[in-house]
Image (cartoon, rainbow, N blue to C red; front, side):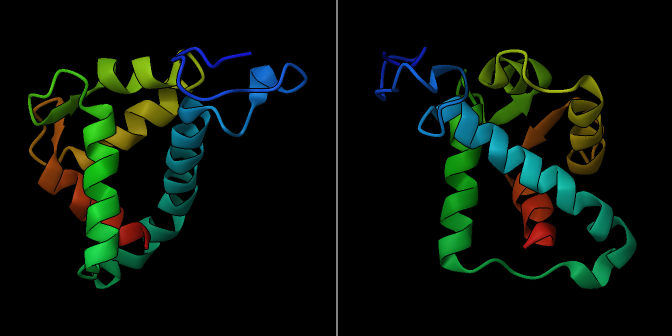
Length: 120
């Protein structure tokens, strides 16, 4: 079988939950970010660290993967479309509360990098 995006082969046995499915990999990343959120909420500002070049590169790539319309912002619709319904609305809402510091309804690269840096 071929993934919904047609890019990575998936075996028929695990197709609905194939770990090689790119949307599953992104979901796993976002789940990891969300699970670390509780810890970060109690850590406060001292949890902020400057990301390494490797981390910064990874964060930028994650951001670009979600920014489907290439407007240098991530909105809720772009995040939902990447997860194809596999994202709890409360998790999505919490993600935007935590990331969208200027309350515009979108997340910029800087906001995303600042947020992701607190989870490392």
